[in-house]
Image 1 (cartoon, helix red, strand yellow):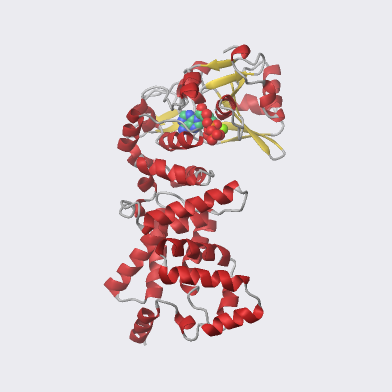
Image 2 (spheres, rainbow, N blue to C red):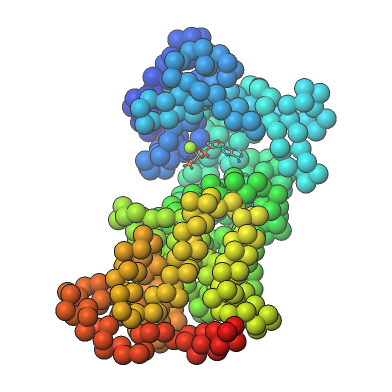
Length: 428
Ligand code: ATP
Ligand code: MG
């Protein structure tokens, strides 16, 4: 596509990306901007990062730059950093064959590529990319775009088109199913019926993906500022409960509190992100797994007669333990998840100095926000409790003391008091 046929210009790339391209070209390599930055520019969006490809090998790239690090095992890449900006430079990737002699490409029995470091031509590189709109190469020398898979067609028809055989490509890398969902939401594009059915059929293959990689992908998906839409898309593609197996039996009723809690939480999260407020994945996971945890705790009380407090602790550990086998939740988030959960019970106990102590807990704010969410979907006492905390935070010193007094002995225990008292009696 000559420069006269499209609106993208060199100045659409960040100055540092231009620098990287220029350096590689001056060293007699071919180099292009590719992927999201070309696609987004042609769709009239602001690219969030810039990817560069070249025929230089990683070692040759490294030799051209002082600020360059080689990373990655599955894909060997060069990271070039300028202050806070990071530009990813990859070498053209070649074809892989199942019985590769070089030993650089490897597949498992599901057809999934597990290692893949064969270099190739630009045509081969284009064929290895996922969707047609991601295989467009911007040539800095003349501002032409090389469009190998007719990405322009996909862009003008707003369709997600796989390069090559859809099934084979999803099997090679099941994460492409998540990417399809992400692009359909982000770019407002259609996944057609054929691709929808293939995803529904192959969603289970995501269980082969290393949990650490899924954490990254799921965070990108859910914390994109379009969480609600993404959830609906993932759910209708049958992907969501593969990512969160604990929710398998909780989401059949879209009016149910379990479904509503997730939608409300994501609505909240989207608003916060779009208002540039702070968000934490801990809140996301706390909400996703709350009802499975609560159900498990109730079951433990019923089956083993342990106290609700102990059951809650055991269930929390169990539910998180199961979830991290699918999506690795780093400890810096899973510990806050448990704190948010355990504070739910503590927020019901409002006598003496407790409310003041609770308010200075580092996780109070998240726990209070979560209580409000629960109150919204469950109503009743839970809703009133949330309101009480809202007022308490807004009140001055005297008013706070009055609020605590007005609760009488009711504030001492909270609504789950009768059961707790019974189990305490049993233990003594
Ligand atoms: P964004 O950066 O907006 O999330 P992107 O398309 O640039 O979107 P990246 O993850 O930055 O996504 O990847 C850059 C390019 O690498 C993609 O455009 C695509 O061509 C290729 N690519 C990334 N992941 C895959 C994959 N799993 N399979 C095939 N090609 C991929
Ligand atoms: Mg990108």
